[in-house]
Length: 127
Image (tube, rainbow, N blue to C red; front, side, top):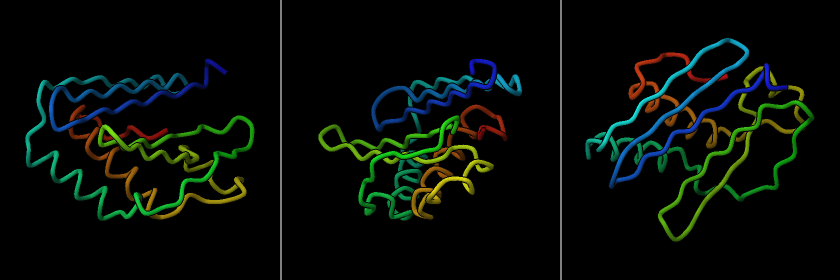
């Protein structure tokens, strides 16, 4: 339902702007930020967290969710190869699913939310 929609988009690369946009119709929360260039140390720190999460070692699975699930997609690309993983983005919806997201995926997603939180100055970006 549009009145219950949640949108989160965080884009970062080693070259160019960093953007973050979040809208939650259910709670009325919003966050927007754009930075022309990310500091090299901050970008490296995020990359290290993603690598240390071991998310890139997961075998991709086709997305399968119950109806009305808030579905997240983590996409990591080096420009040639793209890794995508789908997950129940609302922690309250994880238990009814047939399978919980792997801890590697949750660690990677938390690293992205933390980076987005620093960029926007907002503490609560998760659904």
